[in-house]
Image (cartoon, rainbow, N blue to C red; front, side, top):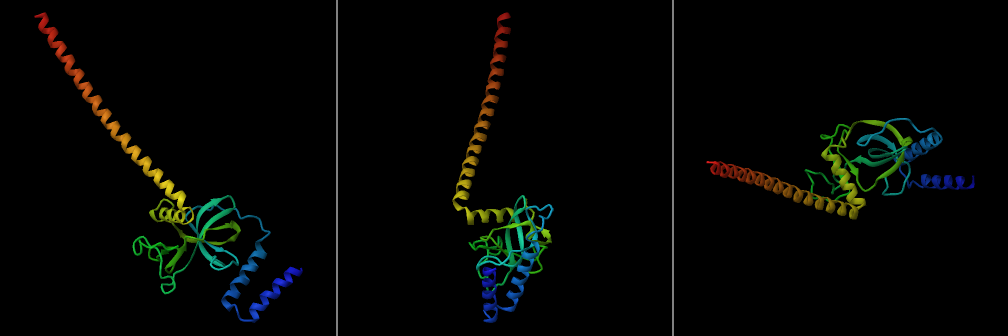
Length: 223
């Protein structure tokens, strides 16, 4: 109880001191209520798949971690844990460096621009936070958004690759290098296979010609 009262006192202190605005006060109050209301509830039984978009309660966190209620793209599912990339509103004045495969392909930004004209689940341009994967319980889901990013699509695959590059650059570099080596070896195998087939064809032709000459010689000898 002592630690609880201490925490409440500190929270009241920042509220009274106007060091937190009314919007954030409302959001973290909702976050606390949801945690208190859901923490003992059974896990929700629902089928969740990669590429789906949900509204999540990310809770209170330190800057620059994602906090409170936001959309999120599911990029992994492990039993009752989800691996999620947060989505939030795009502000051109604030987010001056974002990645987009067409508009800003050279950018190395940690933010992937999602245009509302390209994705049905957003009503305005948003950004996907590539460098802030969150591991969350299924009970943090508030509701499912309409629309999804198909895991077989070019966009989703690019998002996964960018995330790997942010988190595991050495692994991705080695993986890509091994893939190149495998591709090169496959090309060599294909070339050797074609050469082998060509040699077999030539060999069969020579055998046929030799057999033809043998038959002619036998015919001449009999005459």
